[in-house]
Image 1 (tube, rainbow, N blue to C red):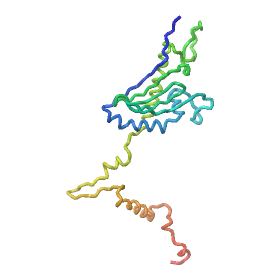
Image 2 (image 1 turned 180 degrees about the horizontal axis):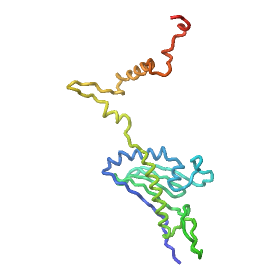
Image 3 (image 1 turned 135 degrees about the horizontal axis):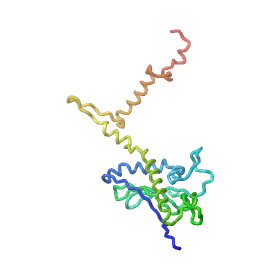
Image 4 (image 1 turned 90 degrees about the horizontal axis):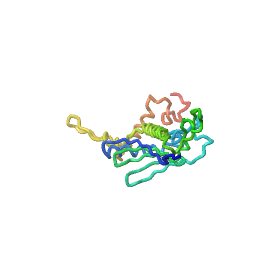
Length: 226
């Protein structure tokens, strides 16, 4: 009896952008979000593993190795989340393609709902995923779900530019009926005292809920009749 096996099984999802500049505009935000926000419980959920339902953390009975690595390559930058030899990674390909890829090298860590060959009644139950091509459909199903979860998690990235870049478009001088009005530039040395004066005037504002130290009567004036 010969069984055909597939030991290495990558499943990818490609998102094509109009050009390289369009992808570069968001890709750095995707990488930053994946590094700073995706913790171990998130990676476990991406790959279909359970976490503690009460705390949302890694289960106490978890045994394995989970790592995240960032690598600069000639083609671009790749981030990879590895769990016991299986991994989920994201990278920019050919300058304008965002690729999310799940690779299963150890299928025995996953389950498939099937009958066993030795059972004459062919009862269905959960078994370990096999290397044989008969379970390729299940491996594709697991990888597709992992890629979808990862992309959905990346959807929370706003892709907004840093504050100083956003301010460049609005902190400019304008002309109204031929008269020039100076731009508001909070980073200019000559204008920086203005926010301080604004804060000082706010302390004396009647809209303040509680009096500040500067608006309270002086100690020497307390108790005297006006």
